[in-house]
Length: 395
Image (cartoon, rainbow, N blue to C red):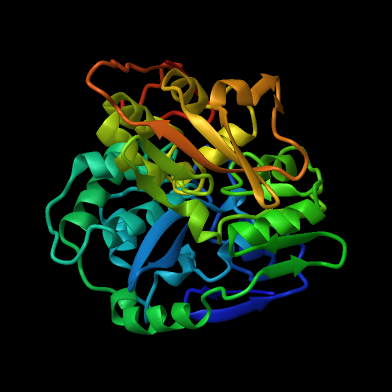
């Protein structure tokens, strides 16, 4: 069983197809059709939702592409969709700003923009009233609009975020934190419809055990690549093992000689450490897909799927990075250069998984430069705004 908050409503799901995405769950199971499907591949942002989770004793809000997020990833979190923003008949301030600034024409993309602006506003922090264009461009880079034009949407962002007003989420913050603490995962969860299932271990040891027992299972971290098998290729995934609940594999640690990045750490969480040591790596991470994808996708997943268009492997190989592979109680460290054998073929053995990635720290005698080669994309966004989640890097 998994349990999560749908806004402030506690939901418990046990006999649900784990191949169902959050987008399908909202539209087909909960009747919340405000969230739209545009591309079903994480490129357009029409399906953007916001997920709240505890970081210590504080709430953190992040945007996700609901078309690429399996419902099992919601376990222990809060899901907020566009329907949840209106309160007592009044539009939320980000919705009102879109109206005031004429930020919508056909309206199909509007719910996604609204949710990205909502997360941006919530993460601005208490008392922050200044408008930051760079943060706005980054927050909206994963949302595409073909008919309105971005100027009025940016004006709406300035209105909503430059004069942040308390909302119902602030009023219920203490209650939400208490609810999330009460449903925090305490044992391995399973979601199954009787034929397909998804297991969510809480420790590396549990993962090693359950993966050894199910070596044909698909490992699910962010799912930004794996979900495409369901949404684009219409395949069924009989068994998945979700690693997003394993705290050990979501940590980013700095040692004397390495940056050690857990394989389940979202790319957003890797940014600060990598950018501090290698500014070019940090700059390219900002061009890596969109904020929605970076909030969800992981460095371990970008390596593990062995895709030739993966953004990070060329940089990591150039830096001499290693991967720590785990199987049962045993682990081994392998240079990333030796991990890749052929197209979609790696040195990983059955039942073996990437536990973490080790990146050597910068030294004065080494110079690192990286460049991204991608198509020209003409918009009102600055060059830092990424065009898609599938461009490649050259290092």
